Image (cartoon, rainbow, N blue to C red; front, side, top):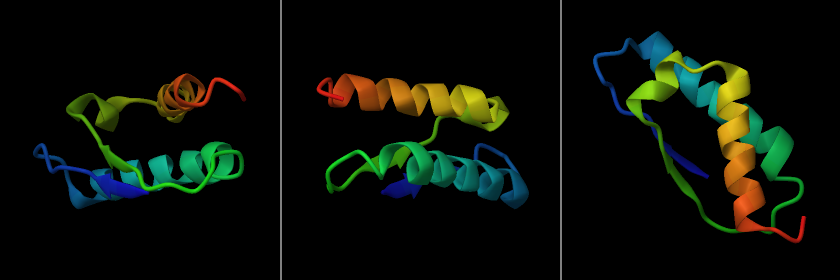
Length: 70
């Protein structure tokens, strides 16, 4: 998984926190059940203020739409 976390006038701390949250959701929820493939995620401005649960819900929604056999 590749991550693009643009600045959007956010601090390095905020960018790294968002990056860590996205990686953790990917590692726990998607990677164990998804077949190997390349993915590029570009975070939007709203992601900086989103909670961990909101980010998790977005990624799980994408995963469920991508592989309905799950």
